[in-house]
Length: 176
Image 1 (cartoon, rainbow, N blue to C red):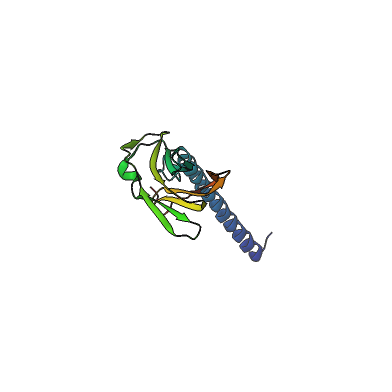
Image 2 (cartoon, rainbow, N blue to C red; image 1 turned 60 degrees about the horizontal axis):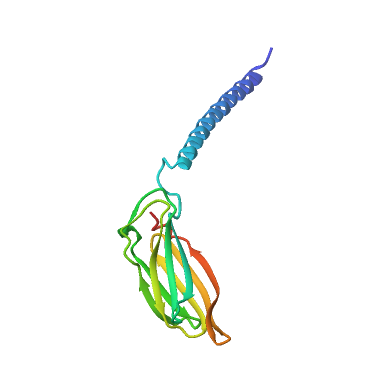
């Protein structure tokens, strides 16, 4: 026959076991809720925090007159429609190797940008001497793109060489 001390220990163990089982049940419920939330988020039902939705690209080339032409395109990588007001607040700047601002340019009019659509959003054209240049196109809400490129003269002909593109991530605090 168990003594009073053993009975007390058995009661404590039973209570602890009951608390442990209750904890496990609560953890399972919480885990199930978390899995459902993750599944809904993956399907897009919990909002549109899917990251960058507009993707910018840039190019630099020379036209037939020897002017440098920088073109910025935007591609809607989301499944929603964007209007001009949502893409605004963008600017482009061209710098030389000494980081002197040489030019500024702004967005061309874009009335709407459907899912999957890509359009030219900005274009700058100007005369640059041979050298190293840097172009930055940024929006406050959707990131942007940077280009590094070199203009050099080969056999008496001006050429664009070594164009390197880098994406600028959107600011999470300002992203849609």
